[in-house]
Each structure stands twice: as C-alpha cells, then as structure tokens.
Length: 452
Image 1 (cartoon, rainbow, N blue to C red):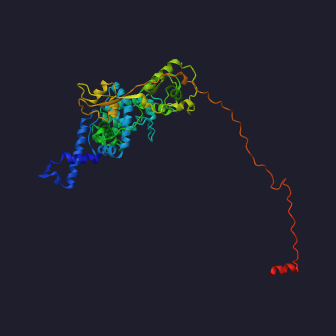
Image 2 (image 1 turned 90 degrees about the vertical axis):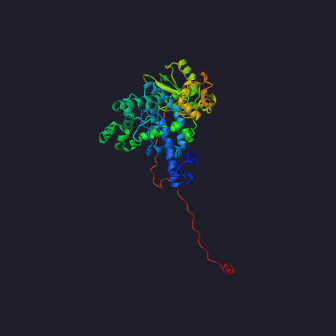
Image 3 (image 1 turned 120 degrees about the horizontal axis):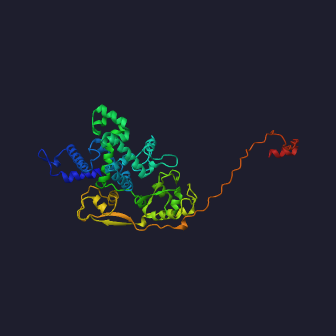
C-alpha cells in the first residue's frame, strides 16, 4: 500500500512542481525519493492533526511512523483482526467512558495493551483487555481466583482500568503522564520528572523505561490506524455478528455455561468467548450476581428461562465437557438471523458519529461495517451499512432437560501382580533325549558305489 501511496504522490502531486527552475522529471532519484517521503509524512501529519488530541499531542516521530508502516505493510492481516475486534469491544468502552466523563480516545489504550484479546496475559501476570495485575485488580474491587477472573470481563475490566487511569490522572493532571504511569508505574514517572525537570510525556520520555518510551507512540499509531484504516486499504477481518451485536444481563444464581448453550442454541465456543471470565465453565453465584453477555438475538430465550425456572431449582451438568447430544445442534450460521441495512446522512449531519447516533448504532461498528473513517467528510448521498437482528430466538422448554450423568462406580483397589518366587528347574517335567545312533562299518559294496 505504501508503494501505491508514493506512486500517487509522485504522479499526481508533483509533476508541475519545480526545483531551482527544473521540472520534477529532471530531479535526481535521491531528490525525488526525499520529496515523496516528505509529502507522505505531511499527509500523515495532516491526518494526525484532525484526531482528538485531548489525551496527548499527536506527533509524527520515527517510532510512530515505524509503527504505522508495520500496521499497513507488515501486519495487514493482524490489523484487519484488530478492526474486527474494535467493532466488538469499542462500543462497550465508549459507553463507560461517556458515563465516567473521560476522553473517548482512551479506548485506543487497549489496542496497545492487549491487541483487543480478552484472554491476553503478559509474562508478569497482567491479564484482560486492560492488562491489570492480579493485585491491582483486587484492590480495584475485582475478583481474581481459580474459578472467576473478572479482569477478562469486558465491562468490569474496563471499569477497573478506567479507575486506575483516573487515579493516575488525579496525581499528574496530564493524561499522557497518567498513561505512562499506567504502563510503568508512578514511581518511574516521578523519577523521570525529577531527572528531566519536564512537565509532560515528551519532555521526560528519554528518562522513562525503554518499553514506556514507545508506549504513547504505539497508542498514537493504533488510533491512527483505527481512524484512517480505509485510506490504507486495510480490510476488517471476518467475525460473526453474534460476537459483535451483544448485550449483558446480571444473573443472581449459579448457572453453567453448558445450560446457557442449551437454552440459547449457541455453540459452546461462542458462549465461552463472550464470557471468558468464568474459568471453570459456570457462574459461581456469588453475592451481587454475575454479568452474562450473549448475542442480542438469543436474549429473549435466556430471560424467559431465568424467569420460568427459579434459582432454587437444581441444575445438572454444571461442569464441562459438553457431553449432551443436543449441543451438537449449535448454530453454525448465525449470520442468517441478521439483516443488512443502509442509511444516508440526514440534513445537517457532518460526521459519522451523527449518522451513527441517528440510527442508534455504535460509531465504531458503523465505521467498520461501512469501511469508512470517523473523521471522513460526508456527502449528501453517501451510503453507510449496518446490521440488525431480524429474528430473535424464543425459549423452547423441550431443550432444557439433559440426560442424567452416568453413575460413578467406586474403583476397586488394584491388586499388584508379583512374579512367583520359583527356582528355574523346580516342578518342571523331565526331558527324555533320544539315544545317539551307533555308527556302522561301511561294506565293500558301499565303497564301490561311492566311486561312481
């Protein structure tokens, strides 16, 4: 893609320009290359200037430029997967950021922290989309144990991550310094502030740990790719709509994900993917309830089941593996329950966010589904695409009961096998050997026969 961009700049932007009275065609190869690279950098700088600079100054330094080139040229498939995951998680993050009154651009932190993978775990034990350490997560009110890791919950993990960021912002009153402290700890940031006598990230950057020196540049590059992906022909990866159009409810009971898969008709891997925090395959039923996230199209069935069957009613098959035959019918083509729709900007709409709000669609989903950028200028007849549920799943009581578990048989103590202690020749039958025949003296006739 970068080659195409440079070719475009060389062909369309520069043929009429002159250097010292000579046309572009007369420049040396070195002069042409320098000019094209400067033009490409100017274009990226102009785009960065359009982005929200609430949390940091968007510079184009070598680290940011290198990261953008990696996203576009070296990691196009991974970049497409990031775009697909952003349509799944960014609406959840924006909802909490708006409620907390914090800058929406903070959602891009998760691209650098976890590449938007809920199961991401670092070498030092940080986990979840916001990469919280177990001790920090517990201090912020999350449960982290052998059966429940709420860092992996998109909502709870986001709430805890934003709380920790807010604590750092209250210390430094600067979002870039708060992000640096989020990455390397406030102790390292305080040490860098003392050594450099600076007041912002860029002035103390060289005094920070090596990883943190590129932390903010990597976030800027990630934000750039999320906003201008379509300008570089990056195609969002494939992802089931069941993973993108979801909602969550609070369940005040112990409930197995096995049962959820039965009631909703979802494949077990979809239920697990949306509820990664339940490490043992069930909601533990702790006080205060637990969040259960499912595709919106199956929520009517789940709500009906929870209302018809009281929590005191015993459940069977709490634990994996998923052994019941009914689970083999999990939906393999859930996209058929959704419809694709299109819309155009209304009079007065000048941004993609306004179009999204008018149609009650998260802006990140509208951008990915339409392959457009949030900062694009809109035309009167520009067409944007989105998806909605066409058919919801009702509750079917025939799918609830499962075959009883096989009875467990007490294992008998194993009897050790011992080799009998016998002598090799003891109790063996006697072996009768045939007697050796006695040799006979050859006759004169036998000698004559041997001559012939």
